[in-house]
Length: 359
Image (cartoon, rainbow, N blue to C red; front, side, top):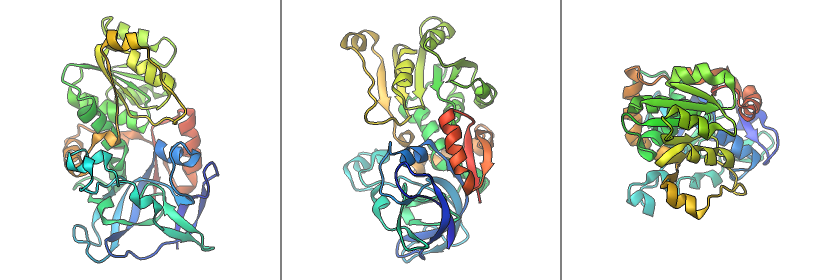
């Protein structure tokens, strides 16, 4: 029996309860979690914006220590520190074949499997493959990557989603070049990673945009040179800060039509907007045909930062060990499992950076 945060049904409150977790079978790994980040995607699963089978154990951004491995697992062993990878690539589908592993057709195939049971025998699924909101979890072997040396596991938990997504949005999707200006909409966990990645890329001006004045100090600590309180005039303010032209690159980390549109309008003619935020399928963003032609801007979706975790984790680890990327500054609250509902409320209210569940 282990303690876990269970989503009994879409829209229902999380239940912090004991679950019965099986021993790892062939090709599986059992892990004791050190920490798990509370990501907006977990909120999207709980409210139905993203659909997975329920009831489910949520949590997808985490790190921990291997307790046991099943038959055939050779790349990790008991006692090893690991980072969870919620979107493992199959290696054989069309997208994996052309190197776009972040779009793997089978990445979420594991969410339909039986993960565990409640004390009364109810079957549970792993919310996004890895069920990190629990003291322990059992995952497929391709959902674990060796944790980088020299980085505490509690910090390394953030590598599993926020950091890979934010770093990748800058370096793989938007492909920010040295000297370019970047505007970042939404200064939560991913937004803070984007700011740091933009600084590493050598952006000349990094503008943070958020509804909360309280996040300015945090944004500047992450690398923002300017801070703008979001409003209807935000694109105009961005143009004033960039010589009347607009930013070279905008990264949207909110997932709302209004902020996607504002991010696009904040870029210069020929500018690039990368959308990281996840919105609902009923939320539409509109453009007229003439403005698309006239402005020559690009608007690009971004899944998991267009990252390949096996390739990118060692690069990120070098930045972290060299002091160029600070994981601990992204965490504004350390909580237990019972603090996750309040962390969801803070996320909805736009408060804080990353809340981290520490076990």
